[in-house]
Image 1 (spheres, helix red, strand yellow):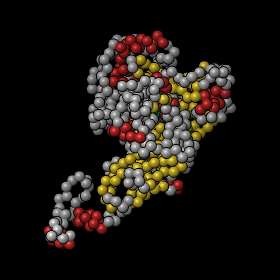
Image 2 (cartoon, rainbow, N blue to C red):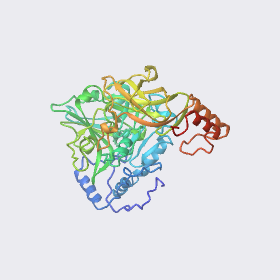
Image 3 (cartoon, protein in one colour):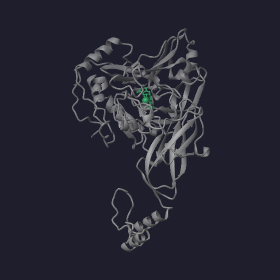
Image 4 (spheres, rainbow, N blue to C red):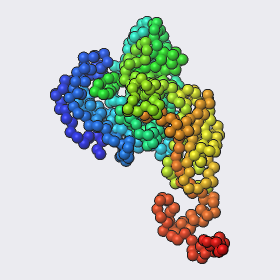
Length: 521
Ligand SMILES: Nc1nc2c(c(=O)[nH]1)N[C@H]1C(S)=C(S)[C@@H](COP(=O)(O)O)O[C@H]1N2
Ligand SMILES: [Mo]
């Protein structure tokens, strides 16, 4: 597959549909929909004219081994159908992936871009801060290209003194105290692959990005507290309960177009916990992560941390936008395509305790001398990881990861860890990890304990299968030595051995000692 060139022709030619103009100079790719119901209606009429290709089946069928894994043809076509202003967004998005991300990212969906870092060399778990180039990306649409000089946010709704604030205003330390804090962002789709494998479902993120364990990362964010900004705008009016954020990107759902929008309760903001950030790890926000300004909501599902922020609207009741109201829902296993509604799930906010083993990798075959080194992460949205436990036998015997092998504690960040697990047994073993947070919350035991039709929040103990070859055992040491002498490898363990397992004499000697196959009387 040539990712930048969809394999079907662009069926909408320039000039066929009215141009949906960009809202402002210096704001490339930003089309305002939410303020113009007529324009939204027009777009929906155009979308209704086409049959868009359905996403390929990959939940009940194997995932493609390509990178990008999935292309997102349907979402590209939505953009082509909207005419000249949107048709190039898929290509622009891919250009930023190449400019801003590590070349070996795992592209789970090419457009809208969704990608997570590879595990190679346990790169993402070596330090608690994730390199900007390796930080996962979860987009619902294209990437707007906004000039910092043309940039401002509008703050409106139930505040006493609505304002427009430029980035210069926000960076003016005589107006706003600057803050920096280390926060983990986790997409609630993290580890979805385990649910897909065992219990394929719908997945409200439309394209069901098949995330592994990498849709989580930690950065030091610099900006201002939303609480201070709201105070600057005269504080809240009576009846204010939620703060709604709008992004500059366009987002399609069920034949309608929207700007990305979400909300958080006022209470979350009052706890001084919501940041408007322009810096990520000491550098300006990358375009793909929301340049020039994004929201960072610690402890909550990543979806609330709105990128390319255009507007903050203080409202009464949560946002009615689809991402808030119709997506990121948590259902019981009794709910599925046959009976799901928006109201019989609940909206995911604070993330539960979760963890993952990043190395070794599922199905690795490991030659070791009685110990295997594991690395991984542990996170809790409502506290911090206090204890990480590892089991080498599927969860009967647990070992505690020593505290000095875990990265430092933060209120709102993961801890990365490493541990040398004592492993005597050989053959296929199931390793698993579970974390206890500061409130002694821990993880469900199996995917089966807590799966969700919507394929969100896979927080059960993370399990991998490992083939153990323990060379501290004499028989194994002898076999390995023999193979080495013959220039052969034991790996992969699925390839038949090309040599005899023992001599006939050796066999006869043992069988004599065992009194043969049958008793003599
Ligand atoms: N404007 C906008 N903000 C957004 C999104 C988006 O598509 N558009 N995706 C959300 C989701 S679901 C997640 S998990 C985080 C991911 O942040 P990152 O891409 O910077 O890692 O951004 C959130 N903010
Ligand atoms: Mo997400």
